[in-house]
Length: 130
Image (cartoon, rainbow, N blue to C red):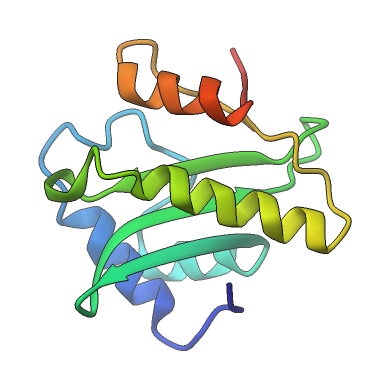
């Protein structure tokens, strides 16, 4: 876990934009533009997982006044799915919250068609929103 570094916003934006068409249809926590992403990330905490210097998974949590629990999101590169990377990212986020005495009862909006994400949310104790 680290604070936002210079160019992290560019790295994440590029990562999200390179995913296959339709892959991110239901992942819309914020705009993927570099400026909007940088602003949003400054108000969130997140985990980036790299393999051989390539970003392969991105998980984040942020507090939103509309919800009691921090909302989360996670995306793993299509080519690296089903290897436990999103679960690892969520574990790090939970650990960070516990270390800093923050609410770690996460909530998320998850597409009901995304079975893998629903299973991960259930295993991780994530509350499903609307």
